Image (cartoon, rainbow, N blue to C red; front, side, top):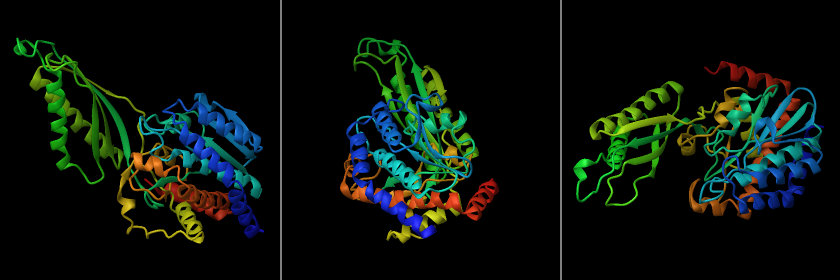
Length: 389
């Protein structure tokens, strides 16, 4: 009976391929930024409603979040969709594929008739907005026994190196002056910003391997002949563990404080949040997903020998993994560029990427199905979750 249900999962996803491709391409062609994903929200909720799910639109106080359920009682497994895009370069992180994969897994689990509850969660604003953080705080994962999703990347990784991140907004306030006639009357806010960024650049050589600082100047001045009296920047500060993140945050702020003192400008600093936590990949669930993906003909590099396992990334799925057993494996799509590049955006709409998504969604659905029918797996995942400090 179990093998028959697995075949139902595979046949359901393959049978829905055309619809899933249409969903993915439609979202790709309508890129929407954090908390503005109205087209994707309507498309996904309408589809799931028509497929027989109980759909709550604009769930958990977020206009573009949703919760679609089938079944009842425990166990309860959540599969997650993302669908926000990036400014200017659109779906350069392939969230159109993530949305289709979550829907595919939900359809397959419904067709397989597994016991318990299947939840398809629509989670907006992963690209810095932290939709999952707000949903977590508002009870979206209450009663959930396992949460999982898949994410496209240049390669496969079942144990990705997801580190914590917090966002920083800084402003320098100086005094304007004519840059040729009387520069000595000004306080140069751009000099302060450049000096601070150079301080951060020098700080980097003392950073730990899994720490990162990077930012952009969003306001740099009006014209070359005016001493800038105002500049602004946004930065991301990343670290593997919370204690390391707090230590790094203090060092980064010190770079800006030093620049303020050196130039005489006034500094304002705001940690804008929400904070993304590191990911605690649940080993029993990850191992089960890897075995299912390999059974589909996908070769997974051994844990510890995979360079992608060491490449730092950040996601609000990390916060979820601190609340419930969770996995966030990466699946490979053919691309000439990494995530957040125009080349990746183009790759995310390819037929090859679609086929890769179907395989990943199948392994995801089979892993979720195991959670629903295998009490030992669910118990082991909970014990592993509770052992993590």
